[in-house]
Length: 230
Image (cartoon, rainbow, N blue to C red; front, side):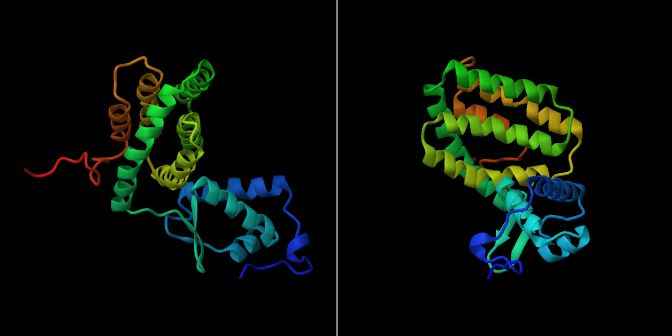
């Protein structure tokens, strides 16, 4: 059962000030990415509140926001944990991503407009110029893909991809890679951009696979695209 702060019934319980909530989100994100909290670690709401000398409300709201970003997972009756996805799970998710995001790329390609192209171009330009934090790089990466998902015109496909991909993107963010590797991965979004706007002859599925292979070994292993022993 959810804890209710004393003196505040559920219907009238206040929200934390946005600036305080944002501060807690920023602090917890930094601690997770720095390795203070490792994948699979439980994030104890009460303990964090005591450490920060604040009430549990902003901590609870910050953890919910981090859950939306994919950095935190809510395990029923156990609490909030830093996202932890095993290597086989990553490949299983990737195999489903190939199916869903290929469909999204083809739908977006058919519905492409100058306005969508401009937004995608602007995001790729930001990726090319990126020299910030890994969290900022991950946010740009996800925003680019979300722009394509939104362009499909199918909100159910868009929601399915968000539910599937946000934890996976967060999982990749927790990898301690160098700035150079992260920059190299970001640069390969142009392959998808050129395919989806028709500047290349690449099939959307092949463009997506090329992009995914920048981060994963054999992302198609659990799909029908995998090479089977003869």
